[in-house]
Length: 287
Image 1 (cartoon, one colour):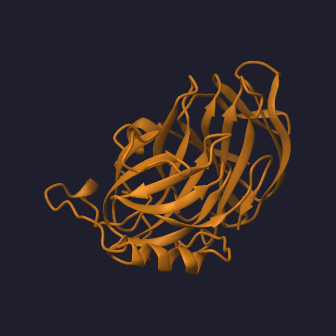
Image 2 (spheres, one colour):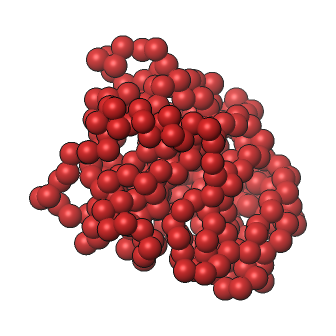
Image 3 (cartoon, one colour):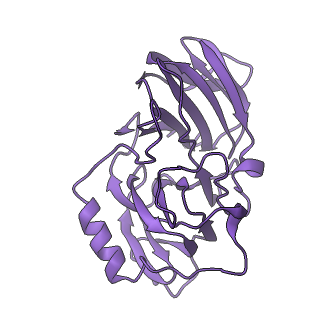
């Protein structure tokens, strides 16, 4: 059984302003002044260096890489993305300010817009509880491609999804065969791929890449703990997590600039960053 929960990214996720409003999806069990934040590099063919508040955050970030979620303090981060090895004093390929409220579980995505230009968007991940025997499925369109339909077992579940919006449904746990087709057609753009939707998980599928360059792909981010009181701790572990935390602490990123003049969405405050999980195409999962 499928229960639909459509979401307009620009309205409820603050995609345009990149202010992450976590009301309704904030993790009640999270620290009062922390958030869980991941970063996904979805710009094909370009390794990049990511800077936050002037300090190098993620060096030589490869396309298709989704970092592990990390708990970070609330605050405002000036993010700049440069081609790997470029002078950070030069013009960045992408630049945005991201403010994350405390208690949120968020993913920041560097990707292509519908016209193929790089941009930075931020999403709050829904970590609310799901009923027994069910899982949450979210699809985010972050590809340089027209509107698409997303099908499960050949049946459209999400229709007319456009970049950079998302849509969400609660589904029965189990394995589904999913593909992405051009909206209103049977022309397959990505897939099919088997998605293992385990009970009590939130599964976020990113359609990314470029239709013109024929490198469209899927990336799957899996969050656990929704079958009971949400923990807000995303599944997924890599050997780079501790190294990343040490690097972030050394760069001063664990003490971000705060903006006391504008409390985000009436929620306490949290912030941005990762450990990493590599993968460059097809379907990969962060567990």
